Length: 162
Image (cartoon, rainbow, N blue to C red):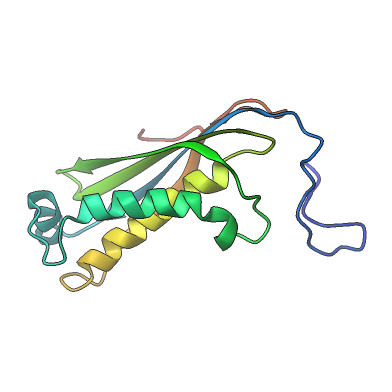
């Protein structure tokens, strides 16, 4: 197992010094799945949710979250992101919306947390906009799918059903 890096010699949490690391192209792809009942799913798909266009608002929320990750996650470094993209893949048979984020930067540290914050916030935004008609919405399978760049190289998750 790899040594944990977010603790100093005294065992206290600290932000890792990345100043000596080489700047490289970094990319991370993450996903989340939102499970709705058929009625709520139809309202979202048809754009008839009372609060407005659920997917459009969730997309903007996800982008904003990626840009604010270092304000939310204590040990994350502020990054100059070069790209944030979210896609929404509705599944009519399962009444689910799969959210995929792709985040990029050129820097000394990766963008995994930014990609994960993007999908989590987009999923929470869907919940928020739909909670008036369904309280038991399930947000599941938030995970990193891929990351590239940096000393550790490429990671591709072994994911069932993708």
